[in-house]
Image (cartoon, rainbow, N blue to C red):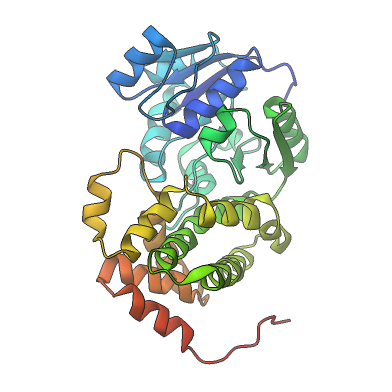
Length: 339
């Protein structure tokens, strides 16, 4: 990949898609942002803001909202997909007719497809021509969209099978307040980004139950242990989970008040039902769907994921969160570090 990429199509105008599109536009890139919601499109055109998903942030004049995939990809060198994981396949299929040879594809979507148990790069591999997968990349790490857009210091990771291309993407996204690390571990980075949302629901539920800081710290630590177990079983580098896309993203999502997944868990801990919580949400909490995917994937791969299992029981089978905690605490004693 050349370092002089300047024309980029961003697919998805939620908080994260808008934040990344604006970050690139503020670097002087020509950015087309595909917007699904008519009200968001009109607001960006008229006022250069997206108050529905990213309130209070003025958007760069280099960012152009569009309403078709054809407009988003026309003349572009890179397409960045930032849509919820449950529509990722459908969006890719819609983009495919507009992809040209030499165009590069990357994603900043965090999740695991419910129907197949695939991470997003596997979905891409099943939809896109093989030529696009060599330079396919993903971006993940501890990064609330609101803080990135406000210019707060943030560090993330971009992974690509080819390290040279990962380094090129790294340079493309890096700013004075947005530090990017490069990796070749696509599998590990994506699993860390998806599975931390499940643990964040558990941490939020613990906080909602007023179980204190000890319990939250235990959930984060043991949550990382089961994320790592599944990742290693799927071929990931275990060191990835000690990095920004693993521990970094996990800590942020389990403790930050801006975390949608932690908020879902907190409300569950306070006694609210899942249907009641989701009916009032305008943005997707990926952990709800990912819990089902992760639970089924752990059974398929044969990896023990007790926290994920209990959150699955709470979300999908109506188990009382207090009973879930009791069952976690009274499991058979284990050795902490297995060699």
